[in-house]
Structure formats: structure tokens, C-alpha cells
Amino acid sequence: MLEQQFSVEMPNQAWVTDITYIRTHEGWLYLSVVIDLFSRQVVGWSMGNRIDTQLALDALLMAVWRRRPSKTVLVHSDQGCQFTSREWQDFLKSHKLQPSMSRRGNCHDNAVAESFFQLLKRERIRRKTYATRQAARSDVFNYIEMFYNPKRRHSSADGLPPAEFERRHFLRLRGV
Image (cartoon, rainbow, N blue to C red; front, side):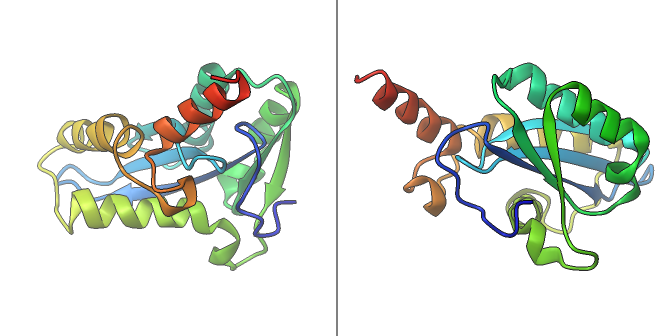
């Protein structure tokens, strides 16, 4: 269990995941993210018209594909039905991922994911209603891949952007 231990020593020790919604004139667009606690980098994400297990699995699949963890990774989520489903549990087991869940009704147990969503909505969305889901998808993609991971500085990452924090970590490991 994660038990609000949000600092880890290495990448791919613990990931957190959650889902939020974004308002469009076509209806909600749902966003699922997977964040590495080491650097706060979004390592997997998925967007869709439905808030279902497949949305969460697609984000987790991206994280597994991108990171290719060699050891077991703790994957922390809330107790939403997407994360308690048999499909989710089977995926975790088949990819050697260890499940961890928040206590019921305690948003502080998943504070890192909640914080990311708060930043996204404050820094990019700003109470906007997108004309289309595609417009929202493009803007959220741009925020994650072009700003948040490579440029947004984090106090938990020594004031560096997540991607740079990890790059420097791996350079240190190689003695560079």
C-alpha cells in the first residue's frame, strides 16, 4: 500500500492513477493519467468519451509500454469501479504490477494525481468549455507532452521539470 508515501527513490517504483473530466459542448471528455511518483512525470494517459475501465487500462498500457519496468511497480488508485474491475486486476497481475488503493472517500490518499488535475485545470483549462472533444484532446495533449513533462518545474523534483529530473537522475547513475 502507498499509505501517502509520495516520495520514492527511483523511477518505476510507484505510479499513481486517476480519472477526471473536461467539459465540451459535445459532452464530457474523460482523461485518465498515470504519474510516476519519482519525478511527477505523466508516463501514461488516455482520453475518451466514456469513463470506463478501458480508459484507465489504455493509460496504464501506455505507461507500461513507455517505461518497460523491469521490477514490480506499485500502482495506486482510488476505489473507482474502473480500478476495482476484474479487467484492471487481471492486467495488473499479468504485467507484474502491484495494486494499491486509497481508503474509501479519502482524496488525500491520491493527492499527487489530484494535484496534477488541479494544475491542468488551473493552468490550461481555466473553467473553459471546449467547442469539441477533439479541441479538448489537442489542448490536453499539448499541456502534458509539450509543457507539463518537459517544462513545468516541480518543487518535489528539485525545481526541475519531470523529464529533466529523470534525465539527470540517469546521468548520475552512469557517473556522468
